[in-house]
Length: 259
Image (tube, rainbow, N blue to C red; front, side, top):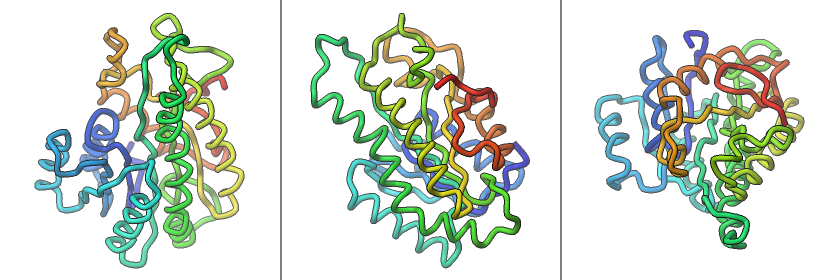
């Protein structure tokens, strides 16, 4: 984890669960980022109280209003981040915001599918487009020709549930829209890695494990992993990623996940 040295990081869905865990761990690094941008839908709401408390204690934490399904909100967030960075780029974008509907085949609706895709798949696409200029600027300002998350990177929070080869935890829930959206996100990550490599930007998808969050516990079962275990592992993986890893789908321990 100590290998991750970035000047700036943005985390979406940062008010709870894995997103909040990322913010806590980043602020606690031996060499914390100069800027940690924590994005969430309602920064002043009750569900962002823990984030507000952290911002009170850490001057390098900036809470950014963001709804990843709304282009105008994304544009405003990008402008706010750019203003804080004062001419430098954004090193690391962690697309963590995600939703799920636990419904069966028979009860799944068009609206369910559309909502989940809008957040889990289209949101990361729009975010990468909006923040590409800042990511490119970070890559251009970093020495060396190789790729790394300390230079410029997009990390998409995927799920083993999106694996077509090995349909993870099917016996615990069909989660049709969630599975489809994460399978699509994996392809988006691969496409981003091919499209952005020339700009010096690494792109990878991570499976955080089955984690004790509101979403992870929604199906009525207690997940085996804590947020701290998951995020701690993922930050170690993120710090070790290099050019050979761009476009890959890995878990919190750095193991390749079946597509």
